[in-house]
Length: 463
Image 1: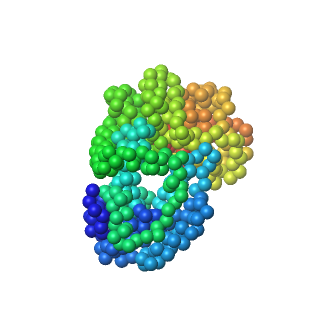
Image 2 (image 1 turned 90 degrees about the vertical axis):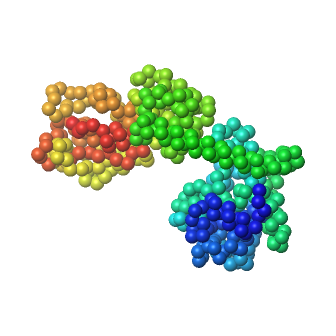
C-alpha cells in the first residue's frame, strides 16, 4: 500500500483510466469520511482536469430522519470547495422481505447511472478495507472467481465509467491524510453500526482480530482479488470462444453444449446469462438445468426457473430469458381498423398489415368484418391455398418447428367469425389473394417471447 496524497491518488486514477485528465469526473458524495477525502484530494489536483471537469452527486435515500441534514452538509462542503453538487432524491424503502442494504444500493446506483453524462466517470470511495470485506463476504457465500474478484478499479457504468481510485489505500491511510489536512466534521451513518447487517458485523467483530494477526490482510486479499479478476477474464474469453460454435442468435445449441466438458458447459451458460443481463444460476440450479437439458428426450420440454429467469429448451436450442418474457396469452381483441397496428398486450408485441407481393389477405378481406384477434383454443383447421382439404393448425405448427411457448401465444385472425390467418404464417384460402393481386400479410413484431425473432420474424415462408 502506498501512502495517500493527491499525487498517489492521481497515479491510481491514471492507472485505472487511460483518459484521466481529459474525462470529466463525478464523485458519489455521501458526506462520510471516505467520499469526503476523495473529493477533497481531487480538488487538490483539479488543475489536471478539464474546465468544469469535477462535480459531485449526493443521493438522498429518504430512509433516515437526518437525511435532510446530511444533504445540507454535502451542499455546504461543495460550496466551500467550489464544486457543483447535484442532489438526487430516491425512494429506497425496501419491500417486504427485501434486504434494506441491497435495496438502497440498487436504488442509489440506478439513480447515479441515470444522472451520469455520456463519457463521464463516476468515482466512488471504496478503499482496500472495503475490498477485503467484499472478498470475505463473497468467500463465505461460496462465490467463484468472478465473485472473488470483488470490486474492479474500473468498469463500464451507464453511459460512462465507474472508477474506484482508492482501492489501493486503507481506511487508516484515509484517516491519516484527513488529519494531516485538518479535515473534520464528516458524517457518520448510524446504520453502519448495526451489527445485524453482515458487512457491519464483519467489520466490527471479525476484521479487528484478523488484522491483529495479519496486518497486511487488506493488501494480500486485494492481490488475490486481482488474480481472481484475471482468471475470470480468461473464463470470459474461453466462453466467447465456445459461444462462436455453440450459440445461435439468443440460444445455445444443445448438441454443441454436449460436446464441451462439464466445466465449460457451466461456464458457457453463466456467460450467456451475463451477456443477456440475467441473473446467473447458482450451482444447484445450474446442475439441474444442465441435467434436464442434456438428458431429456428430443421431444421433451424442460423448463427451469431461478429468480426472475427461465430456461427453456426446444429441439436443439436452449434459451435463457426473463420470466416476464412469457406473459399470459392475449385475450380476444377487436381490431376495428385493420390499417392501424394492433397492440396485443404487455410482452406480446403488435400485429400490423404490410403489403405483400407473395400473396396474402385480399382486398375483400379488408372490407369484410368484423376483425378479431383471438388466442389458440385447440382444434383450429385451415384450408391452405393450392392444397386440397383442411389442415389441423396443431400439425402445421409442429411441422414449422415452432416452440410450444410461441405456439400457445400465436395470434389468430378471425374475420366474420372465421379463421382467416395465423400470425404471419398462413392465410385461409377463403381470404387469399394470389401473387400479382393486391395483398397484405400480417406482421407480428415486438414480442419479447424467446425465439420470436427466429421462428416468427425470421421464420420460413409464407403460405
